[in-house]
Length: 207
Image (cartoon, rainbow, N blue to C red; front, top):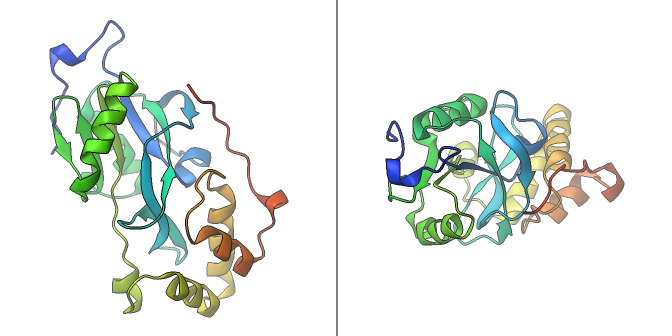
């Protein structure tokens, strides 16, 4: 469980600066996620892929080791404590706090894949942030299909899906930020007939 608050040394006059990472639908459909200001396009580089089968049956973006790294987005959380910020992101994602990763400058951390902690820590310091949180759900492709996740397996899954699932998949891909150019994305867009003109613009700016 995350600490209730950050150390006093990790505060400034405006309070702690906690970043929320995003790379998919969170940017266009934040729901009850509370953020301050805009999304920024200079987040840390992480290996992201359409590798999790959602409750609706479509493929969603999650961290997948050894996949192509993409630059993520970030925004300041609307909450001043790590506990409140992680609780807020968990509610938006419809999951428990165990599936929310976090790292603070005093090294309070929870991450499914520890190999990215050093990268995230360096990014935090460069941005003068006190902590960062992210959705840390795993790929469940193998559990759902009985096959190890792969590009060909993902395409085969979509080809066998019904019309409703394919429509949800197309919608999810359209609203994903253009900068989230995963290894699989272009092939999924071709399979689902998604043109460049149909993609949704992501409002953001780089700091």
